[in-house]
Length: 336
Image (cartoon, rainbow, N blue to C red; front, side, top):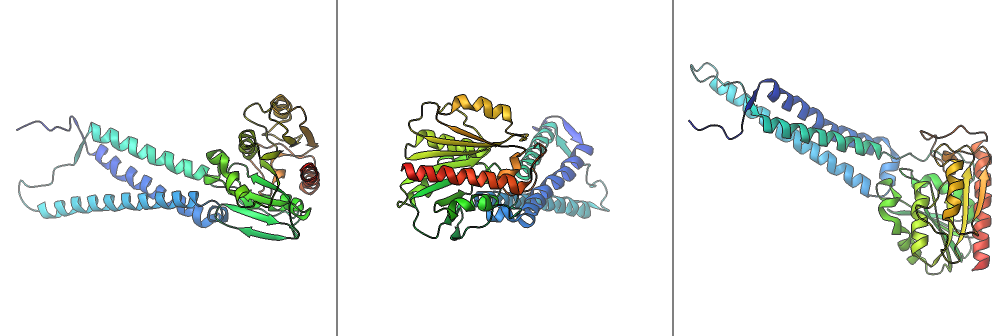
């Protein structure tokens, strides 16, 4: 009889491990994405890329569960068929070591995918009411939120959210900019990661040809994306950084107006990092510090792991952030 091509066999325990570990991995691919979709309003309210990815994971998990159930049913049918028939008992199921190794890799990959999806779960909008709502109109679509002033706007701001932060978390703190007569477009980043599409501001700018002076801005990782866009697009005449700094030097970037606002107690974008970023920005860049402010005060999404301890209230901090931002946009409009 020819030797089995599968190589050395692993009996019983290896086969059993493939069964229960596969069921756990498949179940996680279904349960975790559904928990995110149903339990966090920021998922369905954000960029459609994340819900699509989560639904794809659910479909993959259900398909895997179907094949596991089908395989289990076939094995059960074989055992029942062979029961009571001499010399035809079902032998203990065995798997080759290659099958076992492949099974382990597949399951570890599935666990990694589930962990990655769980990490993408965004910080949801947690209204504080600190800076106030806009007096104009608010419009929302699949990829952006637009705050339009009551009158005609000539200057506009396209804003990149921080990583994994609900775009709606910036409506209140940016509302005063719209109230001052400027157009504000808050982007919804793909998967909540602004660096995945640093050029996303372009579509927002093209949709509003009436705006003659544009600034781009962002919070944390969103500010890195905004800086990248401003460096490569000369029609962006302003850069507004919330607790952020550029990844590359912008010291010789034309006549770009820059305002960097940071919190002295920020545990993520620390004061030391902001000080080091001065060499990366144009010499004319302005720096404003919210004494006692922390990273999470630049939006309304609750506390953030790794952040510092505040020494000022969220309301007072956001009043300062909003006032500095409005002054910056007013100067940009006057210069334009």
